[in-house]
Length: 312
Image 1 (cartoon, rainbow, N blue to C red):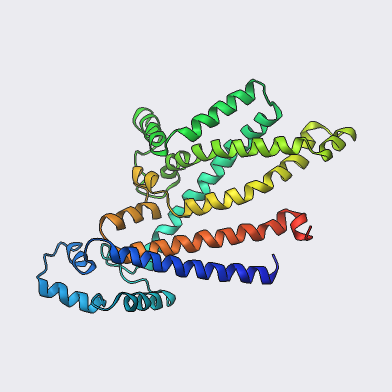
Image 2: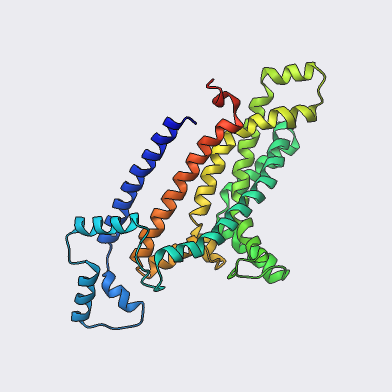
């Protein structure tokens, strides 16, 4: 990517973040409940009305909406998202504490997904309209149809309760605790990606360069893995970036199901406890992560695709 193009993308990211910040603050401002009262109830304190009003004054909640927004935005630009009502810690430290477990789970899930999806998608394309193709297509239909939480509960029953191979919950971030959540996330993704791999490989197999490679006597294995697959993998880069962004945002249903200490579980806790600073900080972080990953994916096309690099 040229410097000018990157500059435009960065400017676009800043504009989107500004819009996300305004929308997030507006929604929490309009949400039912009183942040000042929530700061007391999270500590199990029943305050008097005068105490609530005093805290509201300290938090600046008596000021007009736009004044509150710009004060909060200015603090955010300095890296201060406020303190969590429920955890009584700075929002930044809480998010950083939960970010690394989510990164590990996201990367593990993507690796498992690729291990499953790429071979099945390739086999389905090479054996088009044969029994392996029908088998893979049936499996992908099943995979995209099964809800995450249902598949996760099946894994929990079979692997934890019946076979006693894995812990029921994932309250820590050890390898064994990540297996079931990662499988729960990887299974539906692998079904979707296997379809994409099959479609991309079938399209490449009908290109002229494949006919030329066969005419030169190259083996089908060499054609498939050295020529067809690298070209077929290019469209998947964007999908991988989107999947990584959504996984880093935290998959709330799966993390809550397995009690995994990630960002998704944290977001649910923040919502249920009316922890407005934590909700606002979480949304901004996820928006930033998602857009930065998209920028990196776009820039990576220069490396993976010579046609982009050469301006073709």
